Length: 273
Figure 1 (spheres, rainbow, N blue to C red):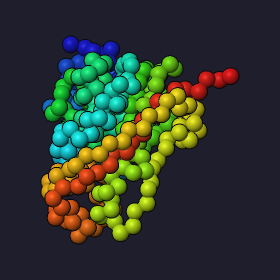
Figure 2 (cartoon, rainbow, N blue to C red):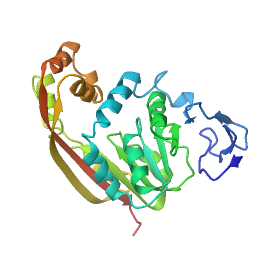
Figure 3 (cartoon, helix red, strand yellow):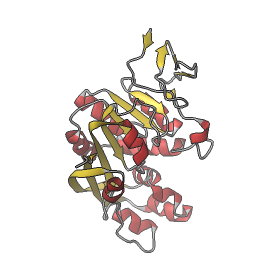
Figure 4 (cartoon, rainbow, N blue to C red):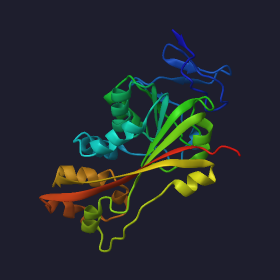
């Protein structure tokens, strides 16, 4: 059965993709197969900075193990409360934890996109009711101005891609870390720790997206030592910044009480005066 209502476009020529069985094809006959796991790979070779970009297998496993513990469920709930309408595009969806919970609670049509094929394989294991794509967030392979809500959690912002995909009356919802996020973990693995955070407001304003709402979410959790704490460490950027000897200190801790500190923003297009 053919399906042309997906809103997907060819990453090479940006013409609509039509599904015929497990193959997707544009009018210029560029074709893409649906993988056996259920995802579509629309990432072009020239969009890769390495052979296998994004999260590797170990990081995907760590994310899945930690997120499935429910410790970040309040972040997911806060995000879900802000999403009012679909279709939704999750840019940098990873292994699909937040995407899947949003789909379960909202029932919206959702596309999950990530540059990591291993992450998208993990997302496919969660559900087949979401259109999972291996693709670049810098140029999402969706029809121009077709997405009502774009969500981006803990992911570098790519304003050009957001501008292409977002409907004129749509919203972008971002989630970023606050200055105290995982401070106690950082104190274990670093000699000196500074409170650091990232606000997307200025960068989004430069791209003519205006913040219309800001919500801060903070709470404390106690993470058991051993595998749960190591899984948390392995899903953070700190994994790449500290020596194995530093990381091994986490194996000696019985448990660690951590502060979760995140900030959610809602953005809309700036209207010309």
